[in-house]
Length: 243
Image (cartoon, rainbow, N blue to C red; front, side):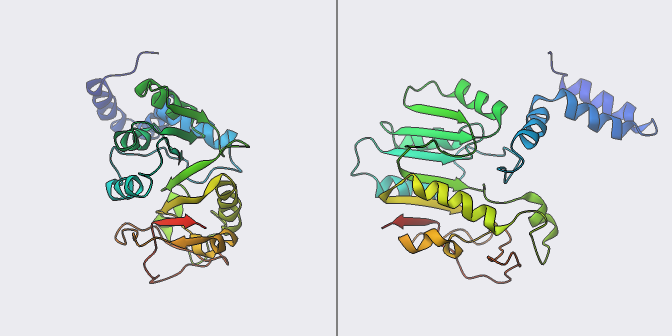
């Protein structure tokens, strides 16, 4: 299907503003015609129980301090295995590739369209992109990154006193257990911009916090195991090492 040009879209918007209900119709049409919007809708429907953040938003070199820190901590492994959990269209994998040219990099995302874009942009035989919501049985990694994954935009937008109507801590704990199961002893788990703290999970007792702290200015709104908002939280570690 041929996509409309930017000029064509702007002309349509101007016309829609003149027609009662035109803008609402335009938004509906955008959701129907846009591959990006269609992929979000289909992902929500197919993975409602497993999905945290439905929007595959990402940037190139989004977390350079973290990537550099992992490069330093894993430099003794010739061919490290790293997982980008919620990899979207693969920018995180490609940023890691610059630092780990011989690594086996795996990207997992529930959004089929995002994974298609990732595979198209990265032809490396050492990169593996999967449409899924969790690692496969038997997977083992030296580092796992879950960046801006364990969150929901509506929570940060509305900041409710209790978040369980949108996202529950128990769901976060379940998926943390899945990641913990496939992380090698001595490996690193990186979590940032989540609505819950890794230190509140059962798995945390098997980890030690790294000295690298998460950026506070862009931290997501935090909630405890009781799903109640935590105001003025202490700084969080960005990386945790499995004992």
